[in-house]
Amino acid sequence: MPATIPESHLDLFQKKSLAYLATVLKNGSVQVNPVWCDFEDGRVIVNSVKGRQKDINMRRNPSVTLCIADPENSFRYLEVRGEVEEITESGADAMIDRMAKRYMDVDTYPFHAPDQIRVNFLIRPDTVRANG
Image 1 (cartoon, one colour):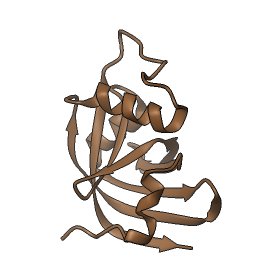
Image 2 (cartoon, one colour):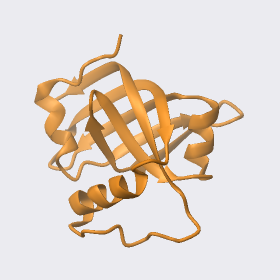
Image 3 (cartoon, helix red, strand yellow):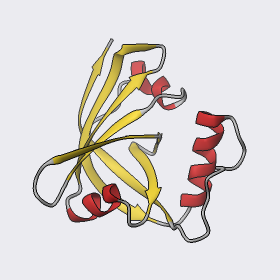
Image 4 (cartoon, one colour):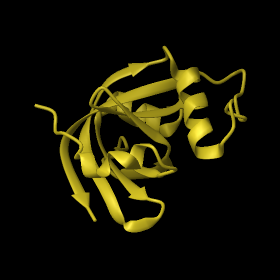
């Protein structure tokens, strides 16, 4: 059964809060990247480019952890451990534009490249810890 994000920390998905996404490399070591994220229908959404290392990692091993820090108080954070439930290109370009609006205050993500395919990763929270 999915874990619930506490209401006390839902605001982190409305702020310019960076998430640190941990994925597992082929050799079993962990890779951590700062990413933008969102939250819809009980799932955390991360957007990336198809073929990047985090994309490769999550397709091979869907287990991930995110630590989302409050930009106003780094000791207030949310840890989400879960699994990638869905990987989709559908709506991914629109999602990166919505995130660019929040994180950069621009209407369109300025680093679109015609040869890149955007992908959404929908993550089911299995364990959630809120601090602060």
